[in-house]
Every structure is written in C-alpha cells, then in structure tokens.
Image 1 (cartoon, rainbow, N blue to C red):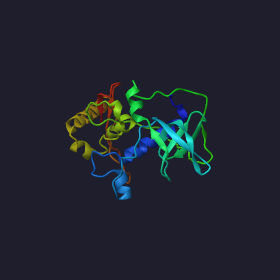
Image 2 (cartoon, one colour; image 1 turned 60 degrees about the vertical axis):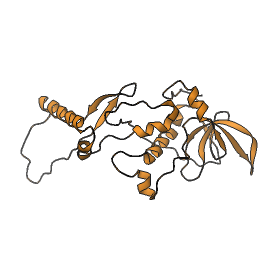
Image 3 (cartoon, one colour; image 1 turned 180 degrees about the horizontal axis):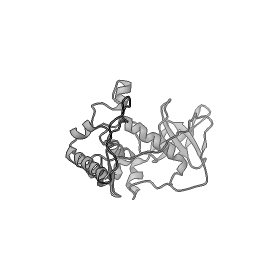
Image 4 (cartoon, rainbow, N blue to C red; image 1 turned 90 degrees about the vertical axis):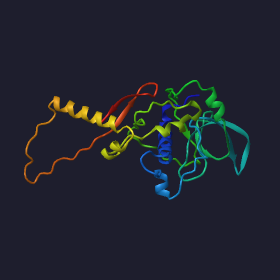
Length: 232
C-alpha cells in the first residue's frame, strides 16, 4: 500500500525529529541534547510507513483482534506512535503494536517511497488531538563530496545521517575535510560573476551601510546518490 500525498506533513515532521537527534558533523552535541540537557534515545525509532499490527482500545479494554495499519509518526505530547488504519481511514495514537519492519524492508525492491495520488483523504480519530503541519518545503543536502547510497535495511532512519551536513559558514567550509573543493567552488563563482560584470565598484556614500551577504554552500546529488556538483 502506498500512502497518499496528504501524509507528507507526517513525513516532514518525522524528518525534522530525526534531524534533531542525528549525530552532527561540525558540533559535539545534537540539537536535542542541547535543548534537553541529555542525549536522545534511539531505541524507539521505527521505519516510517512500515506495516504494523495494532490492538485498538474498546472502552477500557484492548480489542482481541489486531488491525493492519501503517506507522506514520511520533506524537509530541504523549508516548506511543501515530498509526493510519486504511480500512477505517483513521489516524490514531497507540502503544500496543507489533512492527513488521524486517519483512517490509526485505520485500521492498525500491530505494524510495512513491506516493500514489488519491482522491480520498484520511479521517482523524475523534479521540486523538492533531495539529496540521505547515511547511514551505524541505531541501535535502549532501555530506560534502562523499558518494553514498542509503541501504534499504536502514530505511527512512538511515537517510538522516546524510542530511544537513554542508558547511553553514566560511569558517566551517575552510575547516571541512573537503575545504579545497569548497574554495575552488567559491573561486569559480567569483570568476563567473566578474566575467559577467555582475557588479560595478563604486565609492560608498557617507552614512550608508553596505548590504551584508554570505556564502551558501551546497552540493547536488545525482539519481544514484552520487555527488554531481559542489556549489559555493
């Protein structure tokens, strides 16, 4: 089963959560550890969109039957997981689940999840509080010039170790293991702008402050996850 586009909010929120606990490259602590004062636990992490058997509460007791659902995220204010029941088209929170991650990953023949368009929108369980996730989009960055492909067995979690590792400042770029390549990219950009006469040098008028600017470092990936271009 492929989840519809309406679940992108849950996917992006999961990416944000994993980025906050993923081991960083440039600093000794994760954002989670800086904020909470303790390291994050990884034992509760699950493969996004994996099939799960979940027992639902009926009154104050667990139903003897289990429903085949999909794991779609982590709630913020309670323990457990977000699940989607395709039979009832409902989203709910539960801790009583058996994850089928091993079979799900070994049977998959794809490196990425394809989202199928559908006209049906899931209904949210009335017992679950939910806030929609608003986003302007997400950019996936590469880790310097190292070629990588995320192994299927690591699923969605494996991708986070490769995210958001490009230098944020000139100092980080020059201290990076690939500083020579970042410097080459910056020189190429400067020469390109100079040859195209992007600017004209003038004297700064009195009382006027120049507009600040900074370098943005980014490398682009090919279809197989290989680095195809470094930009400064």
